[in-house]
Structures are given as C-alpha cells and as structure tokens.
Image 1 (spheres, rainbow, N blue to C red):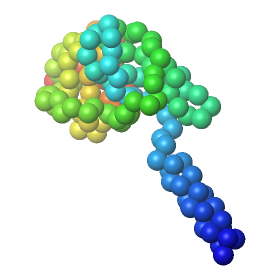
Image 2: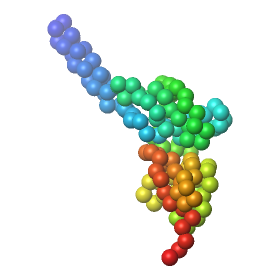
Image 3: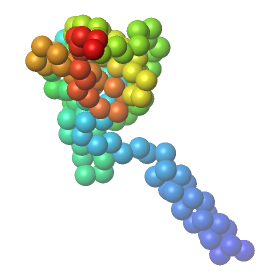
Image 4: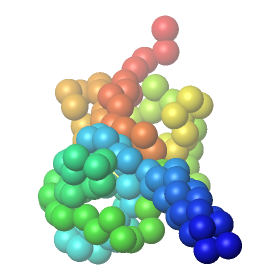
Amino acid sequence: MEKAAKAEKAVKAVKAEKAEKVERQTYAIGDRVEKLCVPCQEERGHVVASVTKRGLISRVTCPKCNTRSSFSNVAKLTKGRSKSVNSEPYDRTRTYRTGQTMSHPIWGSGEVTALIEPRKIDVLFADRIRRLIHSRQEV
C-alpha cells in the first residue's frame, strides 16, 4: 500500500511539473510586454532587450524615452496592450507623430515610437516594432 501511495505521489508531482512548464511562457528579444515606465510615469508597452537562458525577461527598453531597465518576471505579463485604446485606422496618406496610436488591419493596435525619414515611422505593435509609411499622396 505504501508503494502505491508513493507512486501516486510521484505521478502527481510529474503532472504538476509538466503543468508548470506549459504555463510558463518564454520570451525573445523584440517581444513586447507591459511595464510601468518610471521616467514617462505611465504603463506602456516595452520591448524586450535581453532574456535569460531559460527564456525569462531580464531587461526591457521603453520605446518612448529609450530608457533600459530591469524587469521582474514575477509581475503579471500581458502580450500586447492591456487597456483598450480608441485609435483611428492606419492610413498611409495621413501624417503621424510620435505617441499617436493607430489600428492596423493586420497587426492590430500600435503606437508610433519614432519618425524615420520624412515618410517612414516605427510603430510598436503587440508582437514587435514595425516600420510603416505615412504622408503618402494618393495616386
């Protein structure tokens, strides 16, 4: 009877370990996570700058102020924006500025992080930063 109880306990331990591995999400450099940015004084999407060998986040970068900070993996992680942002649909003929939000038909909600050249912008989406065009004339 003791052997059966020990075997059952071992099976439960293995199942719990597998469940923990399934729940733990690994991250890669360039992924996006929500974090409070102290210099900006607001919670915003940060870009993962470095990860550990186990895939846990160690440092993140704020796309607005470019501050690199450490990251606590104990905090609740959310892929993408946690709050709903009312944003206009992306329009390549419109001129954007840093900080504006948009809704892209493929990549979803995003925030303009930088103006690159006169007609290109970097936009932070839930998965990564993407370069888009703007201020284009209708042809």
